[in-house]
Length: 489
Image (cartoon, rainbow, N blue to C red):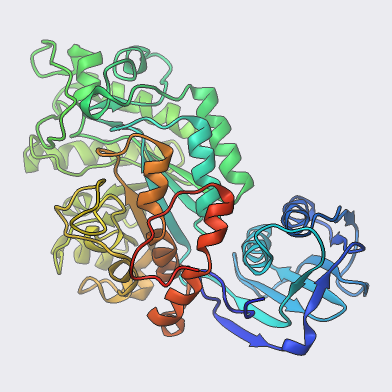
């Protein structure tokens, strides 16, 4: 049995009481106060897998109704914040308390890691108290479906894998020069042509999500307290759009499909009303399919769009996002147009500073930190990595861990950050195994950056906790890179 705090990400406060360890035995039940039934069932599933016992869920227990015999109680109470929780393990009972179901779910992920990978028989929870809450509200991972399409089952598997580390946003990059991956009512050729055979980098990644399939993914994620953030990249990265609809090109002439890795060569026509009719149709449809608060409009690498045209475009498009009830996120290039304070620039470059982002923060914007040299999961681990790119340098686990988002950019402090996201671009990926190998073990490092207090983080302690997680990935059938930095169990 590991220690009470031997989990990923490291909790904010841990008070071990070894003598108070609680045995999860054949008579253990999960007792759910009102409003906790769904998470109670998820917790019971964890305990069943760890012990082989039936672990029933018994509704209706209040916090004051003591229950011995290893009962595990879930309650809702004020004082923990939106996703914070308190885990109190005593010899006779375990109490999981949170202000929201999302906080209870975070606690379940902690309990999951304190339980055996799988077992048959009694399991022991270390005694003591954890009081935990996230450093940042937004803790994200991004999966690129445009350069290579991944099926709904593969995306669901990815959601399950990342939720274990308290990642609460999944950013889906749905459109790019090489493919369009979401069905849009009224524009069927987007997926018929640019989601069909031969699309994706090297023509190796065809496929798309139907509107119904996307909605099912969003609901699946929500059950795991993961918010899907859809991205429709514009005004650049639109060659797939113009292949499907040549009337959206400058001269109305057809353009050739592209399956290479080049960027910066395509642009929507910012001075044509047809462009904005198309954009509004897409935004309206995606917003209607997406219950979460965010819609990502891309905005990066628009090299084929002049600075004046870029400004014109965003001044037309940003209000459309708000019109349909969403908060716009954009790659940090959007900061150049002095966006309203509701817009969230996502910083992705490796530069030491960015005047546009600093100005946006001064204007009231919050920022998502995704510096490529610290968070881009498609970067190679080392020079011999068979997958990935290296334009932002090599990204080993230590480099993904050893940084502070609040000091990354001048003028962008702790209070200015919405959160941290780890993007995974798919130019070199061809399978879910590839996705898993590039994600793990670096994502847990970035998750700890985003969740845990800066003062609680320690590289040597993290290496030890990460090493112990290897058998869990193996048991779950999740591929991971056995980095030589980590003393794997």
